[in-house]
Image (cartoon, rainbow, N blue to C red; front, top):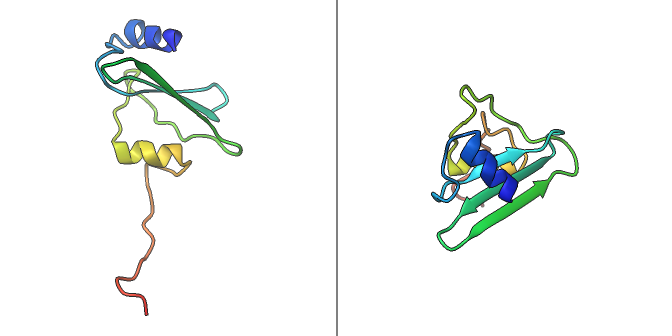
Length: 93
């Protein structure tokens, strides 16, 4: 966790204690680590996919901003760039 916070500070030039989420992907693409500071302390979330890889954006300047919904898709292994909506009828009967 300290190493990731140091990367945020030195490589990205950002404050890891500002309350933003910082997401890192492992070299193989099947592991994601998220760090954030909630005002009380630093937290770490890690997720490894059993099959497949996390889809990762191509950053122009080293960082990419995504929405909470896009992050949720990414964590579920869904292509967050072009999610497809499924038909759900208003009334079942």
